[in-house]
Length: 107
Image (cartoon, rainbow, N blue to C red):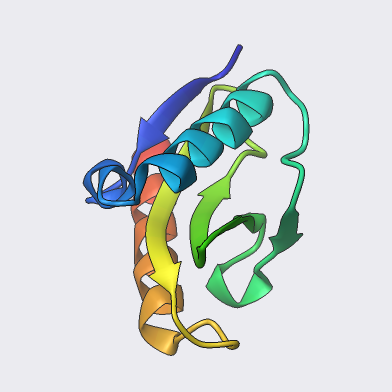
């Protein structure tokens, strides 16, 4: 099982999700740790190469942006409630900035 590395405020942000969305996110992250794909995901190339999003439908829409292509861990870059059809540029920029932090820390 890969470990989860929470980048920036991603863990605190996920804890702000309602209970059903939080449980679903946890289940999907556990699938990633085991080397499986989430049930509902898509690539989010705008945030950087290898960044993907878990799509959670729990009353409202929630997203967990992550990168799982590294052998040592699943890096959770950003978690947020999605309020529009298109992912807001601010959310993409947060994930992109955190991806740069991960890349720099990995050497």
